[in-house]
Image (cartoon, rainbow, N blue to C red):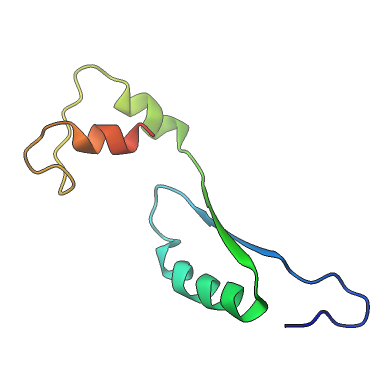
Length: 80
């Protein structure tokens, strides 16, 4: 898509996510917009400090669909 009268073209679409999961529905429209503009799409994850502190607690046991065998895979994903 060409820039209008001297305006700079949009080169990037940034999609922000947090741990709430409420932004997941925006991924597809953002990707379509980026494709239409010929722009790159970047994902930005906003970390939740309270969740990070909770993960660090030694007595915390995770039970997750990501790691049904409770081998710590979910902890590894959350700690990134």
